[in-house]
Length: 254
Image (cartoon, rainbow, N blue to C red; front, side, top):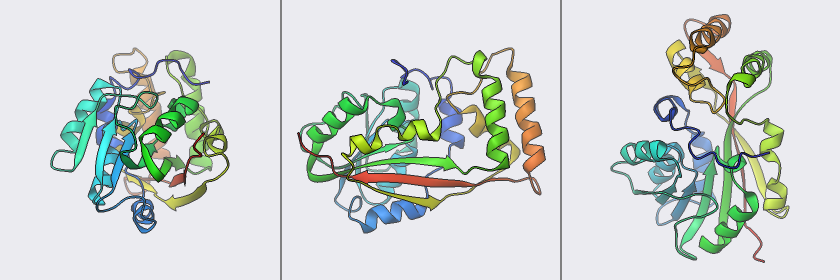
């Protein structure tokens, strides 16, 4: 079940999020350009834009981007991080997008669809998209294996101490087929993460389910993640098998 009000969830994590969250696969961006979904002259909305990680990549493809984000701290980072690019950052949500009717060629949601009300989001997409426009839902996903299994054990052991929300990959996919009325394409793109210890810790602390700074549990929490890093690192670098997974299609107009 999605939380009813999550716009402030990342308020104290915007710095970690902006500094340490990975970009999406360059091959994914190239695929979107090849298919004519983004690129020169395209008007694109990035909904739930966070600190603008995906917005920057979309703008660098030549697209004109409107980034919509409800969290003030994340939005501030998006403004500074996209300075010099063709990106306009607006306060808004997936259920109330501050964009006029039929003005957008494509809508993107990076690492965000699972936070949305899918019915209201679909309604807003239909309203703002030009005829024939696409919606693209994309995530970075860690691949299964020993590392991911052990990571989940640590996350789950702190679930009682965190006023947060996180969901499994299967839960994130709930509603996608219905959202697209079954008419969508899906493709994954390799996007492994190679991080130093501090980069790994920073990305870990950016998660919605991470312990908040100032918590009395923080010292032990970080210690467990440092032990995790030391177990799996090689020559001071930890490699997390990761992929960018994208779903895209056109919405039926009802």
